Amino acid sequence: MKNIKDYDIEKLEEELLNLGEKKYRAEQIFKWIYKENAVSFDDMTNLSLDLRNKLKQNYSLGIYKILKKQVASDGTIKYLFDILDGNAIETVLMKYHHGYSLCVSSQIGCKMGCKFCASTGIAFIRSLSSGEIIEQLLAVERDENIKISNIVFMGIGEPLDNYDNVINAIRIINNPKGINIGARHISLSTSGLVPGIYRLADENIQCTLSISLHATNNEKRSKMMPINTKYNIEELLQACRDYITKTNRRVSFEYALAKDTNDNLDDAKELVKLLKGMLCHVNLIPINKIEKGEFTKSSNENILKFRDYLNDHGIVATVRRELGSDIDAACGQLRRKELKQ
Ligand code: SAH
Image 1 (spheres, rainbow, N blue to C red):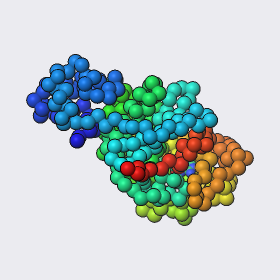
Image 2: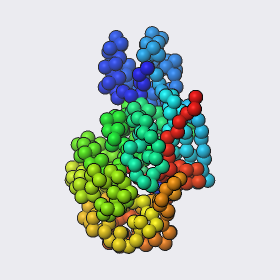
Image 3: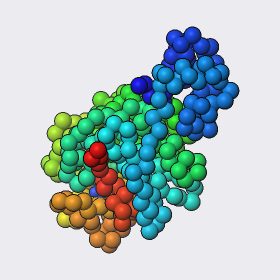
């Protein structure tokens, strides 16, 4: 059955016209789904019984089941959702002073093969539809009875490898008639799919683009991230410069610090050279250990030295807080699960 959350409002209007209904019903349905977080068409009491029945026959609301919910010592919550097709994905809720931030998955598994990331070691299954991306947020809001204020596309999967569904999801999340989270509160992180970055620059969405850089020369980056052999650092940074020129938005670079790999001051120097003059910010992530991973976290001392070097040389850098690592909910620790039925 079709998932009604896959449609933006214009597409839903078309669907309704095809069902012999009036266009304005789409706005009412949108309100039930995204403002009221309805779990059943029966709840949509301002629609005629006839329309509710038609909706039931033609669409599902794709409501997830919570298979597991783990709470970390810092309050971070990791959900394992049964996404109704025999697969399970993880989503992470983080609490900050300024509100709730949700880290969503965009694919079941990941094709990118980054050596330090747990999302990638197992077979890739498929991309999530926009409705499946959005339901992560709705399911968490229902469960915790909260409003989420920030969304980061930093869960399982490479968002730019699922371009159309991710953009459609962002538009529904951003739409004032939909979930209504401002684009500036939406971040998308990519391992560096260069054509996707050029496309994104033309979308006219004010979301934050994060780039997983992690190394300053091609030899090192290719070892950590195989995607670098397809789109190297020079091409990637050129795409970022073009993105900044077009959108006037600051790009965020993620750099996971691994001991004896990419964390000494020579690396910091190289990073300054690469990013000098760019409208950007560097997010340093103490690398999280994963099962069978070859990388270990840099010492706190090295992390701070690295950060200070960047800041002293004109590159704004902060260290990302480590949230949820005691329940494997931190960066790079999420993975798809199979359901044994
Ligand atoms: N595929 C996208 C989205 C994942 S975002 C991307 O690569 O950007 C998750 C962020 O966490 C990325 O910056 C990723 O490189 C980083 N990450 C992955 N594994 C990590 C680990 N073990 N420790 C710290 N950060 C990690």
